[in-house]
Structures are given as C-alpha cells and as structure tokens.
Image (cartoon, rainbow, N blue to C red; front, side, top):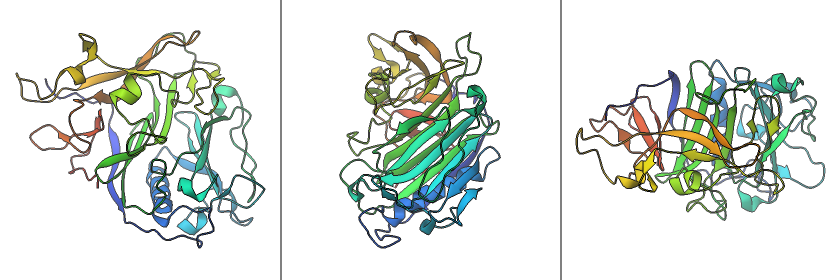
Amino acid sequence: MPLPVLDKAYTFNTNNVIPLDGGFTPSNDGEQPTNDRKELLLGVKNALMATAFWSVKISSNATTPGTGSGDNWTTIADTLWALETGTPNFSWSVWQNTVLDLEVLLVLRTNSNDEGGTPDVYISRPVLSGGSGFTGGAANARPTAPDESFIVDNEQWGWGAGDPTGKAWVFSTMVSTDGEVTRVVWFNVNEIRGFWFFERLKNPVTGMSSPEIVVKMRAVGQTGGAGGPDATYAGLHDVASSVFSPQYDGTSPVQQNPQALSKPPGIYMTSEGFNGQPCGQQFSTFNDVDGEFGFFPVGMASLFAGFAGRHGEFYDMWWGIDGNATGDSYPVSGTNLFIQINDLILPWDGTLPVVS
C-alpha cells in the first residue's frame, strides 16, 4: 500500500536522551523520585513549551517566592514531591494549550517513594465551561478550577509498578503546526514506558457544539501491569479503556476517570478488520503486492449508554502489524518517516528512532 499522506505538519523534538541517575534531589526523604525521572519531566515540559502552542500559566517550585505566574521550574531542584498526607510544600505546574481549550495541572504528590514519583493530574477546559481555568495555589496548596477533572493518580513517572530505581530514558515530542495534536512518548530498554495524547478528533460526529478532544496520559508497565495498558490491540482495541479522560460531547464533560468506578467506562480505539480480527493482527508481515507493511486508521467509539456510537478518528495515527517491534520505522527503504510504538504507528521526523 502507498504510505499515508499526513493530515497535518508537525514540529518534532525527538531522541532526547536522559542518562541514568539514581540519586535524589533533595536527598532521599522517602518521597522523591530518582533524578532521572525528574529530568524526564523537566525535559518534556521544556520541549512542549518551546512550541508555539504550549505555555506555563502558573506554577510553584514549592517555595512562596517561586509560586505564581509563568514557569518556575528551571532545574530538578524545582520539582519537589511530597506525600499526599498533610500540608507540606510541593511543586505544581499548569500547562495550557489555548487551541485545544485545555489546561493540564500536574501536582507532585505521591503515596510513597515506591511509586517512583506520582504526579496527580487534573484538567480544565475554561472556554467550554465558561470558567477561568486553574487559579490560586500556594507553596503548599494546588490551584483549582470550577470544571476540573481529576484524571491520573498512582501512576509511576515513566515506569510500571514495583521498580522505582533509576533508569536511562529517551523521550520524543510531536506537536502539529496548528496546535491541535500533541503527543509525547518515552522509552527505556527498547520498550515504550509512557505516552500522552492531547488532541482534537478528526471527522467527529455531527451535533457537537465544541470539537471533542482526547486527553490520554499513561505510564506503561514492563508487561502492561499496574502501569498499563500498553499501546497495543489488547490494551486499547480489545477492551474499553477508561484511561481516555475525559471526553467532551460538546457542552458537558463525560468523566472517564479510572480511579472512580461510578464514572462511565471508556472508549475503544477501533481498527479496520475482517474475519473477526483487526487487519494488523491478520497480517504477520508486509504486503505481498508492494512490499510495505500495513497502516490501518485508528477510530474512536463507545458502548456506554448516552455516549454510545462512533466518535471520530485520530489524525495521523494508525494501527500497525502487531508482530513488529517498538522502534521499527517505515518505509522499509529506511527514510524513517513513521515509527511503531507497540502496535501503534505515528509520524516521525526522518531521524533513526532511538528507543533505548
């Protein structure tokens, strides 16, 4: 098959290596993740803020002078984790993308050092909700928003459950030049360890007064355990994934919170298929006719009552052959225009992908 033509152009920041550093800043008090995890967080923040569409609205480095407008995270010493209990000082940061009408609040609080760093994550869509987004906050208190949605807790920063030790990381970001699509992926030892998608849907169903967006932030376990699900058919296609959080149907949020069982179940990432399986699982190798591997568009659908049906498609994202490896690039000629991460395929910048 011919290679896909991209819907959008992208600004890439790829193959950023974070060396292993198992030390702690400040010294290990039972609350801090390793320095390399802090460098990973800081690196992702800096890469996104270097684009035209992301900025830091307000933030805190856990000190009173370092709390207020703009970006107060300069070094890893500014990213201070604290336990969930009590009212200690801790760091937080609000990242905003006005094109998506999205504010993302990262709160550096954790249940224990064993989690390797646990940013709590909240989001707000101030224009859609008619609110002001996140405001307030102090060195020992996070900001709040009237429409905030709590979407991530108890996620290790960049690793699955049970291994908080230092690691070497590689991260990459890609942001569309219209600001509607942002993706972040990071790797360790040839495996994807985390991925974030903040994006507007392609061809959403009619009747939405505001285009639906998808917010997905996950750390990925080595075997897809507590940190999963991985970016696989098994984790995202075969089951309804509640980690898509939240969905907006035009005027009101439909909470998709994996931490609250009273919330609706999530959505499926759909694929073309036949004979009872997705195409990428039916085919184990390249196409006999043109010698290329298949790319199969990714859609979004739900079975939840009141939310059921097709929702739309993902821009420039495809299912691949599930036997291919993370870090494989396409076309086979080696020009590295696309990369496979687990079973998904994303655009790439032509460099040789580094995943370890």
